[in-house]
Length: 493
Image (cartoon, rainbow, N blue to C red; front, side):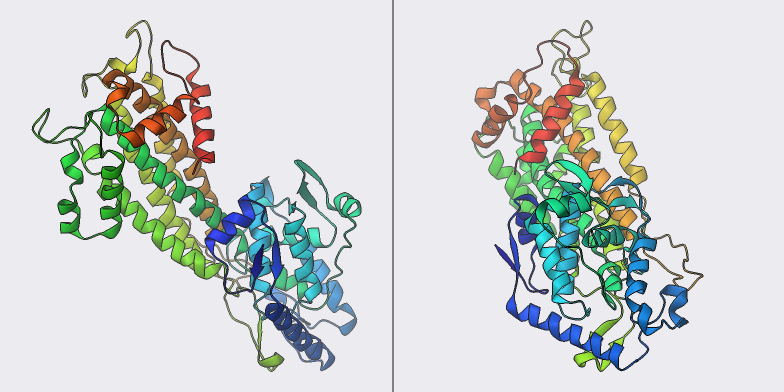
């Protein structure tokens, strides 16, 4: 069980909670902070102080004062009116992460919610009830308003949820599980939706998948090196230490370790003096992508423990400040950086695929075909990889450089970070398929070379991979092989 404090959540804990369904609980100290913050809001209401979002309208309506009798309706109206997201829902694991991250932010004690609201979010996590949240509609500033409103709807017993493999109306599931919907009070609606948790939740899932893919890309690249009798000298530690990038050094070290006892790799001058860049520069290219992933990780670890709503309540309510922590620019730029970095794994992988299948670039059977000419072998698999790489180039265009003003120009600069995080996710799925294609081709190549000559590490991987996709002895529907390999890569760590 993971104890949430509002300031100590790690990406490893997020992984356990979101993928392994580990239970969560709230620390006693954090609950006390929540209670203290709530008392401050209630005092503000009782004292009739005018505070944004408590007894005023929102956005351009911030100058409209709300009557005391209407402050609860204000919060309900906020959620319903802002729940206008469109498009396909976020993957369920992202929805779960969104609930977790919103809860963790509220536990910092700056938001003014009742403990009851936090406890309801805990119940959703521990009972595996996850809001159905449309992906499109957030500008990534003023908070992820539309997506988080769909999350908040569920607390009210409205909207829809993922439940035991189905999508059902929330009220049906609540009745089945004996859960009482929340009736929002002053500030609670705003506290639930004014944050960056949609883009950040998507970003965390992106990072977890991308870092796994990055390691898999090294194993698959090692297979390709064996299939093409690549030159190991390019991975000598002296080269990489001379440049000094730690991530580059680490990639080279891991490749050498994977190939330590291989009889298929060569030394410079034995078969050729040097390899093409897609083989020789694996540490430099992959290492640069690892640098970007490390940067993204650093930003995500800050953001998952950040207070991102508005206004924030300090000093027992004596200091209530309207600011802009809801602005998603830090995550928006990180997601755009991630898109470029992850796309490169596919870009260089596709070039390695070309070297595996092109008879002008190797001494293997053309297109790794069992009967070249009569059978096309892996010819069109390279086409598919090229198509996915090209698609990634369009998806990698930065979202964060765009901004369209909203709320009658009150909110005149926005991050578009949620778009960036969604496009990063799409790129990751494309990259995994490209790597699956390289893996299929590399497996075939090492068979022609002789699997008995493979390194111990790559041979162990080969044996497991061959349980997923058998050897190519004749043409077949390779789309099925690509999808099987892709799903396997998604599952293994």
